[in-house]
Image (cartoon, rainbow, N blue to C red):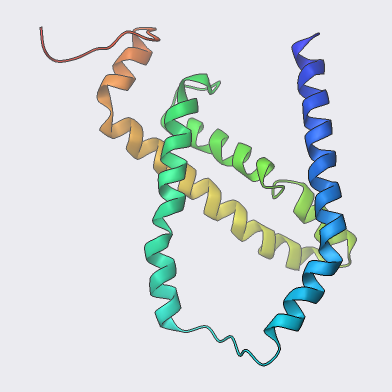
Length: 160
């Protein structure tokens, strides 16, 4: 089977499965959460933000692992461009590239609200991915040298 057709079929089936699960669980999970949260006040505090800041490292570690795995497969060579491509791919995987802004417009949110609300997510992920790519490549000079030499599996070290 053609790799593009195989990719499309895999994307179609996985998207349909995720959509069916999402739609079929949306109603009852919301009702369940509302029922279980009655009488439980939830208020943001700086204590929670400190923990959120510390646990945000999970996202950074995940981005570094993902970048290290896919960097050589990205269709561009500069760190900045690689970071942007990775960011666009992640936004698409999360449905935040086109789907979420489109759905927000469809339900009636005004364009300026959609632009700000969804634009913030674009900025967050694009900046995070560019920073990961630039710093990772800067701190991994052997990886850059291997790329320049056209290497794939060869290791370049300083030792003779």
